[in-house]
Length: 62
Image 1 (cartoon, rainbow, N blue to C red):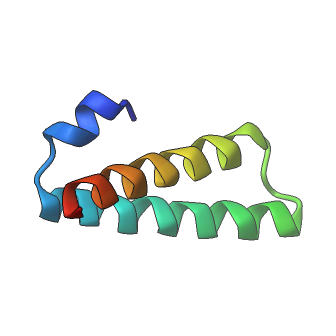
Image 2 (image 1 turned 180 degrees about the vertical axis):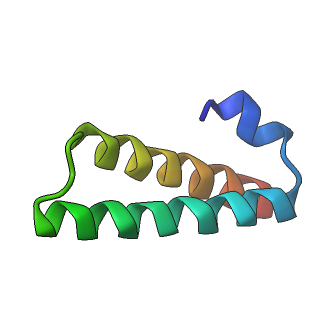
C-alpha cells in the first residue's frame, strides 16, 4: 500500500485497514511457524505496511 493511498483514507478506514493487516500478519506468522508459508517475503511487506499506516496515523493525530 502506498503512502498516497493511505493519506487519502478516512480515519475509520485506516483503523479497519490496520486491523486487517494485523490479522494477516498473525496468520502469516502461524503459517511460517508450521512450515506452510511459501512466500516468506510477504511477512516483510505486511510488517512495513503496518508501520506505514501507524506512522501516518500518528502524524494525523499530532
